[in-house]
Amino acid sequence: MNIIIEQTKEDASQKAYEIFCEAIENGAKVFGLATGSTPEMLYDKIIASDLDFSNAISVNLDEYVGLAGTHPHSYQYYMKDKLFKHKPFKECYVPNGLNDEATEVARYDQILEEHPIDLQLLGIGQNGHIAFNEPGTSFDSLTHKIKLTESTIQVNKRFFVNEDEMPHYAYSMGLASIMKAKKIILLAFGEEKAQAIKDLATVETADEAIPASILINHPDATIIVDAAAASLIK
Ligand code: GLP
Image 1: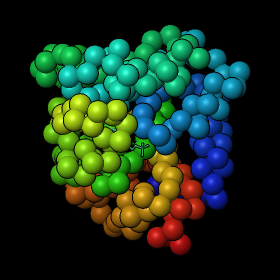
Image 2: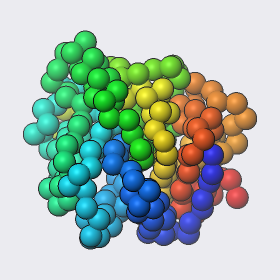
Image 3: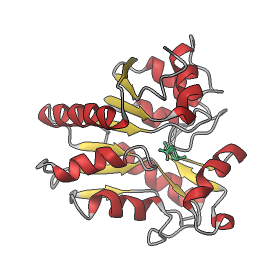
Image 4: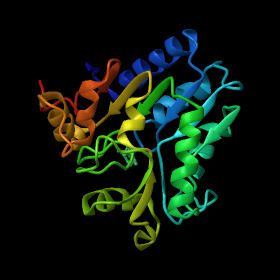
């Protein structure tokens, strides 16, 4: 696992953009994409570029259970709004929050089986989660339904106009599925991510209490952070 510290979020997003370009030059066609505030600047750079994704496939990490893809707080809506409507992909997959658990888990695992991810983009939760794999999730996990922790609910409810509307469950790609990606980039910005980055940077053995720590066992994982997120590891 390689850690790159850039001064600003802008510089870090630029670095991630360059890794995207390089992966595309090397033939990447299937992109594992993430939501949240962190990847927005990278998506803006992709939109502004002449990169062509019309033959590419995207497979997103997660979705809130109970939200339709048309709901403005669903991750499917986010992806359309922030990326796909500006930069068309050939096929875009996001978990369906309206499906029952058995149907969705089987459907999404099949999608992942058929479309091995070339480049996976990740953010990180303040508690060290990646996708919605909360602390304690098995490193062997595939797609699953997860109960969000109180800390994740507190952090993410700011996105909901009516905070009580925030679902307490999500469908998430599992940690074993994320690890199958050929190449992984994790982005983290801001002081509120500093503890999670310190935990990840200093862990000696991957530990299910720190979901992101599984990345230390990946052959090609790059963590790109701004100075604020790196403030506890300098
Ligand atoms: C959510 C998503 C994660 C994301 C995290 C961080 O919990 N499920 O995939 O990495 O939020 O979000 P942000 O980038 O807004 O800090």
